[in-house]
Amino acid sequence: MKLSTSVVLAIVAVAMMSVSAQAKNAEWTHLLDKDLSQWNTYLGFPNPETDIKGLPKDAEGNYTQPIGHGKDEKGVFTVSINDGEPVLRVSGEIYGSVYTRKEFENYHLVLQYKWGSKKWKPRLDLELDTGILYHARGEHGVDYWKAWALSQELQIMEQSTGDWWQIADSQIDIRCEKPEGAEVHIYNPKAELLSFGPGGVGITCRRSHDREKPKGEWNTVELITYGDKSLHIVNGEVVMALSNSRYTRDGKVLPLTKGKILLQSEAGEAFFKGIKLKSIDAIPTKYEHYFK
Image (cartoon, rainbow, N blue to C red; front, side):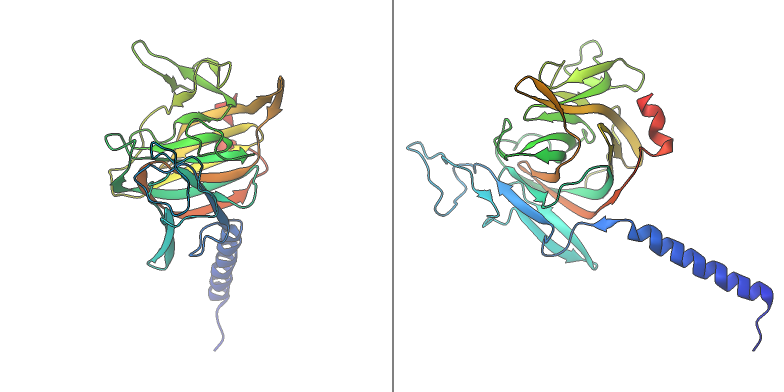
């Protein structure tokens, strides 16, 4: 059977579209599998009522050392396969993180999260909480909860997803304002550029607006970071732009622009899926105006 020229062209066009789609998908590195093969774990100091075999306590019953790396007898981090896709459950029972074995810089990270229902001390009466820590480097357990490494935080918390928090002594610049009566600064792309972290105006800045879906639904969070700049994007909308990522050691200001990626365990149950990353060679054109 001889095909007409128009039919042949249509078949070629479909084939080219398929190849193009495959090439585009191939740009992404998928980070999550059933064995957490691209991740390790670090767990800090458990609550006294959490039984951990062999971990020493003091006379008051408080643990005197962290659990450490690669030990998770309580199953704080577990993966199940749902509809053929790996889903990471973070129980939140012990403060800590699951973190990438590799370091990354200049990338676009995408993941989906939704909330569970379990809460643990000290957040039994507070919002469910987790987060993405990026550009993580150095020792774990050096922050205020003795659970994480020096890094920048893209907060994931009920009604606060997209906030920034200082972790250890990280510093960054954000266009923020503090409305009358507000306790903390709020991101406003038209506001003055302020310094946050040690020596700055505060240790946190809130996202510009709430983009979180109702509890039980999956949310999509994107982190775009290139050089010293980054964007926090929640369900398709930019909620914060940040620049001049850095930290100070012995009086010397150093760039904080590459490192491992951590997902927090922070006294609340959360689920993650679709974790993928691709390298970029610039801030995407449609977002450039956030840094002008």
